[in-house]
Length: 343
Image (cartoon, rainbow, N blue to C red; front, side):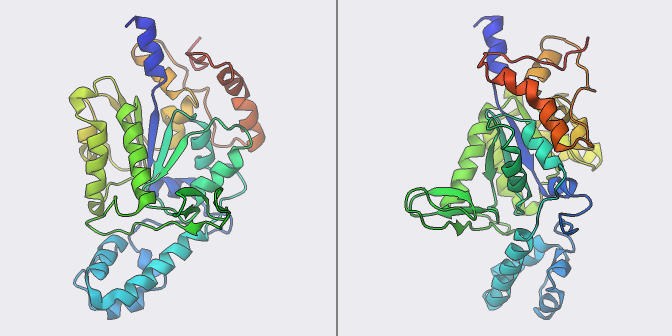
């Protein structure tokens, strides 16, 4: 293989982004269109208005974390009615979120990637898909999506194995889509039982196996997701085999804690930690993250980190910004331009 062929292969490998609850919090820091704020799992029971019901259940756990509470409820048959009511309220709570009219981090994130890439999310809220709907008017060259725990904005026709937005219909039989099953936080999750969940996990495993870059955005890797981390690790492989790849973490937690959490994915010094999306490679080098990273690390080229997305951009400014990038993508060249090289 020639040096040029190697460069083409590396720059065309996927960039995989994994989203946790912190990503949705970052997407609507001031609340959604109706000023409703999304929440992490701690204290979530109070938000659902189920604190009194849970208190009367005489649970062994003293935690106020949804994952701990749901795990115990689900394991005890006498609390089946409470469990079903909790599931209903969780679904309704997340389904009700509406993305603000102005651009969010999710709009920028989707437009920072192309169809060779993947965004995989553990989140149940519809914000990512609502952003996807509206930015698709700019381009159809957008990343693939995976919903690892289901999603309230996704519907399926199980008979014909067709999925889409929840308000859509099956392209085969024409029947309205049914809601996808949400995978609730129990210690032992079954990722193979539900066909939709299984397909979405197969998708991320395929992309992650071939990825050049892996970004983890606002995902804390909770103890109830141990099996999920194992599946991701299996797809990623050993760090010894990932000596050229780059891991980026977008999170506000201390570096020592993050490094420890994701240690089995990181080869030596091949990682970076960013407090927000706009300071990451995706924010600074949108739509060319793999190209820019290869040029920086392998071609020893200087990059200009001030040419990327800006948090205060409106949709008109975003459209103008990505226009040149989209035109270059339409040429179907083996290697796209990297407009982020320093002059």
